[in-house]
Image 1 (spheres, rainbow, N blue to C red):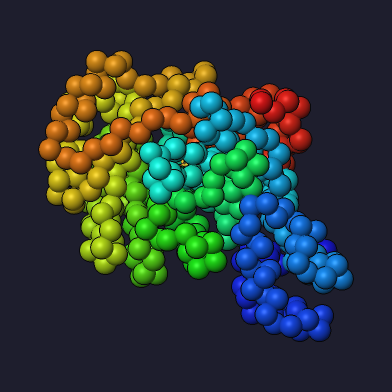
Image 2 (image 1 turned 30 degrees about the vertical axis):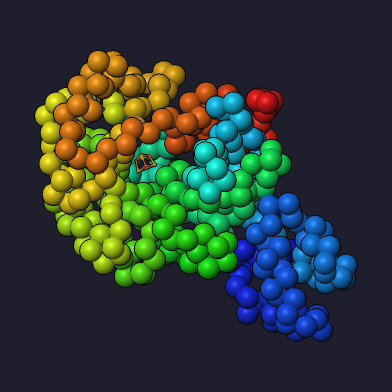
Length: 368
Ligand code: SF4
């Protein structure tokens, strides 16, 4: 059984393996390049390597730590939602979103990765929060989601991956060591600039300081969702440990050190955080911290009391943000259960979750 993940093994581990197989060290570069080719989906695809070496590498390294169980296209094929199965049978969600540009230089292919199986933060409006935390993802499991999404995009004539957001299942900064290692690999080996990577947090203040110390100038997105501690204690329960003032201090220090503008994510929930008072509070916090605001109207989840506000209420909320930098994000993949944790929740609802928390192969056909 291979013991090491190829994507995070590092060049020196590959050089050592080459030495043991009496192959020249320069082949390590060939192998590292092949890892990031979206059309190479196994050692067999590394045709530039001798067959015996391919076999030897396969015995030592795992080509990928995950397989794609289900691939659901949405938004006329511009969004791909992947259900990825890990070696222990647990499953996580990864989303790839293509944004066509006027020309190729403005085209974006963004991959949204999961950092944990489930999440301990327990935001009541979030499908992943309802699962609780099953376990952390390893650095390779995070990195390999980007590779799998790149391959899925490539097969549909889309990609390559240009941007990465850590906004899938889990709280990336509650798994900070794996998050930092995955960021190092993605910026070093996948050729994706830190400026094109966003790490989203519900507000793990000490880990924001660790991210700052790593000197990787990624964008930090704080999932704010409430402008007062009273409401945030309810919507983002980690606020009871790290209240708004503490999180915003840590985020401001991050902005200072990294030179990157922070952003505030605001999932707009009808009747919950869509009041004028909350909008004005959000605007003031954004002005004070020079933050950009991303408003994301909530996806409707079947059987959940949480949903988007009425259009008129949303319009008034946005108008009250005037004076701040605001983007309203579309809810990409809404027709493919794209709110975080929703695809998995949907499959659980179809009773294909095993008692140990793993999912059996889906009995539902992939929606084409
Ligand atoms: S919204 Fe994010 S932090 Fe909150 S429970 Fe869901 S995955 Fe965790």
